[in-house]
Image (cartoon, rainbow, N blue to C red; front, side, top):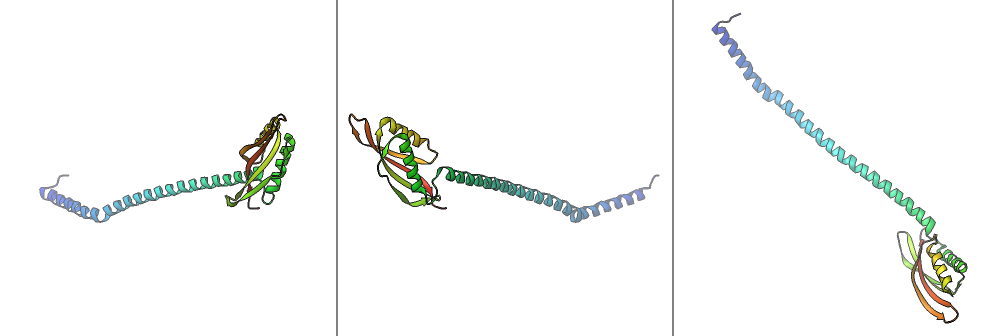
Length: 184
């Protein structure tokens, strides 16, 4: 079908009018919807990023909490197995030292001890002065047994007090320290 020039011009004007009507319609109705969709996508992306950061933080905090719990358990096991208990520290320590002296064949004089006035991490330190007397092999055996003891006892210093020439006996003052629980 062929249209005349006037008809073609009319169709052309109608089409141009529709195009011109579509432009404002696009700018007022379609474009804001597209931009809103883009903004929503950006907001969703930002929320997802924030959620990922928070999940990472929560995971890290849970791992830290698990490590703290493991540390508490390890600390409790350490104090139970190696640290002297509350209220019995001095008597148990002296009893253990006396047993080690007897096992090593040493004679022991009166031991003295003093507890530190401050506690740290729920523990308090006891310093002990232990005078012992015996032969060199016996002293060596004593020190070896003390070093291999399951209890946490530190040899701070060893001072030679006297040596009886010809007898093979030496007298030492040992400065020892250990920790005990201040909480039951």
